[in-house]
Image (cartoon, rainbow, N blue to C red; front, top):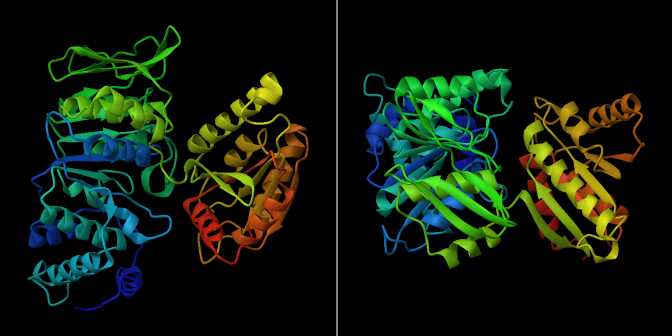
Length: 474
């Protein structure tokens, strides 16, 4: 074996390919065929989109691993990226992370297959970090003899390594502006890349209540069977596909109670009434529920209500208590995702003002924002969206991240924003590291206040490391 330790494999993978990202399927497809993982026996769902992929995957995992009519003891494999604390988070089987030893064995098999796949040349097929690890996950899933496999698309869709697999159901979540240098600068351009996971005549669930026209056109051209989102409204948004109107799936409020409506395989409306407010976003749960209905995999009503109330995902507005303070961690790293976080924080402030001491969140609570982002993101828009929420800012410098935006530049963006908008000037500081920023934030937050950490996966990852450190005083 090339390496015996997982960390050694991962360090080597980071140097294996000349580009960290190289879109295209030829190389990864060749190695997949050599491995025998270019097709899978289990029912497979691929999930693409700009925002909400992780939440849809988490909801699907909760639904499909529960005993249901289609499968008494379902086995489920889940592949996601990126990870927050351990690489093993990316590959899960039956709700647990795959072991270091299993990953090392899979990496060794992929490494060998790189040579057999390139019989015309002496050198092995070159794979990027994501391509290599995707193939390892597929190999582990194949050998585990699973009932369901859920694959999160890493970047785009059309040319992403996950797209070598033809899914039984393809899910596309909300489409926003992100990864512009790779995918394009408009929602239509990005939608064309995401739509690459659709197949001619295949089944798809769309979670965006306002799908770009390009996505609708591609679905129509492929004559795909599409289940469109209607959004969090009582009225139905109809989309025309293949000459026929298809009512959407989605949640609605009816007589003060939350209801979900979707469609069964027979085309008839399917409704679940009197549901609790979910922790994860309703539109992401709606997509997962629609997939479960199509797979005849809905759990019993009592279990479904429990899932909605308790299924959460680390780093997606996840709530924690640390050093006597409330902490919200959110990997939001583009304007659409940040706007959802801002909306949540503003709603909480409104509750505080309207309900006073009886509110869950005390009136006058102070929100201290720990923020760090990457230089290729729309940082000015993200900061602008958070200005009404934050009472204080700590801009942190990300460690060992070449793509990180300098903390001083983020501070300058805030000053320009507050000057232009004549907004109340919140106190803003610069920290050399996320650890230093967290120290300052906990010192500034009141007992009734919150520390909100956002801007990128890297920011949340470093905050989690800080909160897990035994050297930090509680």
